[in-house]
Image (cartoon, rainbow, N blue to C red):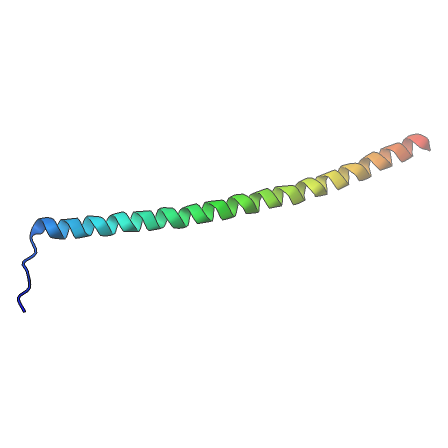
Length: 69
């Protein structure tokens, strides 16, 4: 079986295809990580907000108690 000769343009084309696929793969994985970290940060903020609200409620209760006494 005779192998066809590869010309320089064909090798360059294959290399550029590989680079393009690598870049697209990295962008895809990066997008997935970005969504994951965005959702995680939203959930963390929600928990922090609840903790802060609970602390403020306690402070308000203490202030009201001091005013009554």
